[in-house]
Amino acid sequence: MSDKINVMIVDDHPLFRQGLRNVLSSHDDINIVGEATDGVEAIRLAQELLPDVVIMDINLPTLNGLQATRQLKASCPEVNVVMLTAYDDEEQVYHAIRAGASAYYAKDVRPEQLLDGIRHVSRGLYCVDGKLLDEEEIGDWLLEEFRRFGGEVFEDHFFAPLSPRETEILKLVIQGMSNRQIAYHLGISHQTVKNHMTSILSKLGVSDRTQAAVYALRHGWVPLHESKS
Image (tube, rainbow, N blue to C red):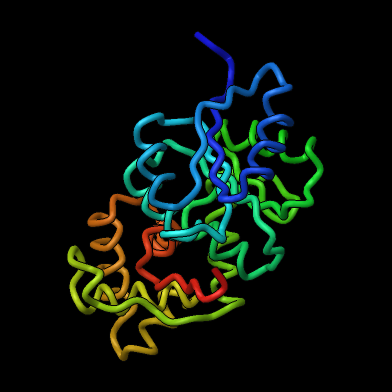
């Protein structure tokens, strides 16, 4: 079995794609399997090729990189996405990770750093703010950043599996409330909140309240703002 990491490049600038291809293909463990120039083509080609890693620009024609990443991760969750973009902005990093990306780099990144990032995300890790995170750590990071930047809370109609009360409770979990705080806020007993949380975890197939909150964030149940795309 090949030890090579299959990589696909998505960028609408031919010169940048060429430079990136030259840098990456000079390393024995990297195999460039395809290139796309816009968001729609990126999704189609990634579904066909199933690369280990997609290097995705944000500012793309047809669908921007955030939208393309969300749709790609929904259909091919095993494909890892590295955002490589001119936007070096903390909130944009947060939106990219929420959309499903595993790493985020500005285009002036050192080649060695990008190569290390590709290798890390191909093994299921996350590269954010110069840190290497696992699945649990990226979940904690997402919740912390959501509470930092704020934003709208999801609409009830996104939650077909959950009752209106369960939806209401999960909103408050995402906002950082404990079960006791939720009980006080809603005027119900602590045990009632615990019962609802048990039902939420069962319906979502997760093991704790943090995982439920992260699940909601990563699946777009809190609207993703894309105004900077």
